[in-house]
Length: 113
Image (cartoon, rainbow, N blue to C red; front, side, top):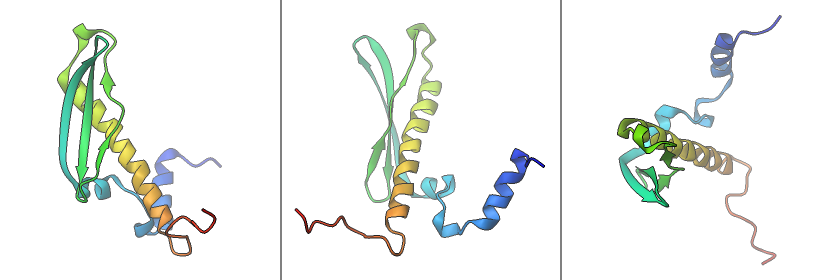
């Protein structure tokens, strides 16, 4: 019998330790500032989003762009560029948590350098 998509999340949540899970709420709780910058490069309008975290790290993802400049919308640009930068933070947070798991080396082994 196949499991429906709506049943996967509740089952997953009961099996995962809360400290070993990256969540949207976790990342959002560490955001200190969000800033947007619209630039024109090679005739193309692009919007970048910088997200500053509570440790002063700033993540900037790929820009939001538009095929036709007549269709440019600031709100859409902000939503898309924020989403792109947030996805970068998600990857970095997952990497950080995996790197600091008990039993893992906390630093690279530089003995062969």
